[in-house]
Length: 140
Image 1: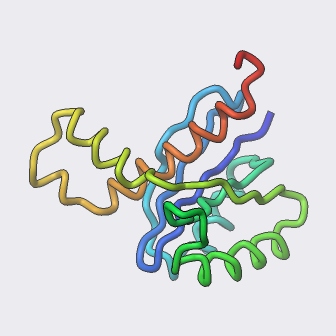
Image 2: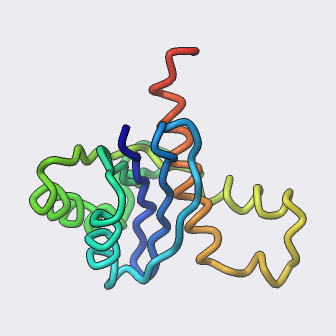
């Protein structure tokens, strides 16, 4: 099987998570400066097989698109054009940053380490991927 990749796209930084090849476990991979994102993805895809890319879909609490969506739509369109063999999906990412902050605090990480926004982005991507995988699970 191939991996599933999750992207928490941001204006400055983008968090990335991937599954194991059996698509059982979501793991935070890294955080990439957004201008280098396509280079990172191209390099990663030469090393690993990915069948699906799940991009966080930023919605406001009222269900409307957030301001970041104007950057995500062109990003998703370009991904689909560059990699037509890979399914690219949007997945609701509401509250993932809040959940990521909570997970960091509950893990006992020091106050200084908690200020690392790259860590929050990577954990957010992991939460998006884990939630997405739960929607695929036949055990529900």
